[in-house]
Length: 189
Image (tube, rainbow, N blue to C red; front, side):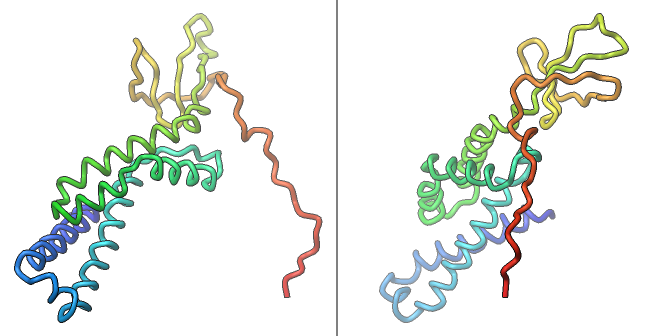
């Protein structure tokens, strides 16, 4: 069993316990007599759900390694906020008690995040010219996705870029970025 399956199984078990508690114990008792245990369970569910969602979102998430994580994290957070899916996921957890129903919501969010990150991935789309065969048409290739554009579709295909000339289609905003050293003296105590 891999890590994601363990997290998923743990979350489903916690949700089943929550459902059973809500069905079998009056709400007043959950909020008074069993308050500490009930809120501990809800906290475990919250933490496990967050781990599950973050694990799913980060699996095979494409980011541009040449652009700062800070910028891309801002884009990810904006996509999450704009999606409106977080409250829906919360309702799913608290009303259906089902990881199976949560999964498509997370995948929808992941697709929205990947779409928001695409402009940064697209900076690595280039034309690849084969210098050994200059008569051949250049290939449209994305160095991050490792896909070639053929017949109107992106197809996964690794390219050996040795002896190839690469022409980027868009100006790459990070090529001219040179870290500037501060001239201020270190004033830490």
